[in-house]
Length: 415
Image 1 (cartoon, rainbow, N blue to C red):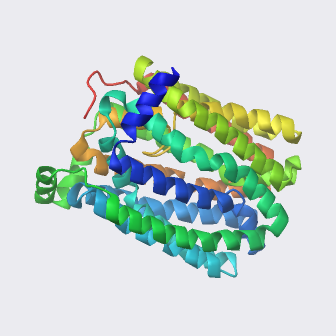
Image 2 (image 1 turned 180 degrees about the vertical axis):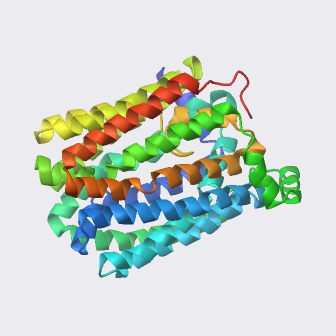
């Protein structure tokens, strides 16, 4: 097993695109996760209420959906590389705005630019799918995810200690400064080293089709794709109903310290990361569906479990169970997610349509999930935090049932 894992990793990371994307994504993940874990607490430092936090998350989701589909169409018309570089440049603006914000309202322009940057996500996912060996897609996505998750092993605990020592206000601002310099480096590296995966013939064919034809073509997707879109949309709504408030529940209701919550984040990252490659290899042998279904069931159940957790040990146990689903590769929403979810999408969607279809999935997922954080914030304040978590669970079971009944794996995988 160890020998086969080593061979898979060696074969995957011999591809230059994967090396560049993995390295730059790992850097961004490290910096971003240092402050994002405690982002709701920082917003409260800026005067935001729980409802305001939900509103900001809703605006972010709504803005992102405006750029996913155009980003996907662009990826199929001008290529993956250009869209990724442009999107990475837009993402540089966000931490600068966050850094100079003195009230929660001043965060909103940064949220908008963050959404504009998401225009590159369909191209990003398509580039990864086209750079990985299709015969071992699950293993390949698992290896990629395992490496890019490595920073989370240390950032959870480190960010908790960091925030306890410097305070949420000063700690977040120091990390945002680092984020600016890291973003500049990422733009330069992606510009210089990413190689286009869309062939000249595909680009010429895409340029001849009008935008209207590209959008019209999206309607004629197989039933399985529409089933996956439904699963993605409903899962996104259910999770976003409560996810933004996990840290608030852990610290304000359960009574954990920031260091304890950060430590839990590091531990579950180790578990999820360790399962990513084995989970991908399993899904190549037995199919994508079992792993995805396990993840779709475990995620809402553990959200329910969090509402009953008391103390550090129980909270850790609940989050560990959740990380198993994530590690097996089910993915939660959108065109991104775990190895099994990404591999299934790549198996179904032809290369020349990937940008558009990934964009469509991102747009519809964002549209349905957009109001969820705001609704969750209202329920949090008006009813109770525990009720919000429990409602998130019951709604999250529905897409698992849809996936079980209506999603079928293709007999012939797309290249």
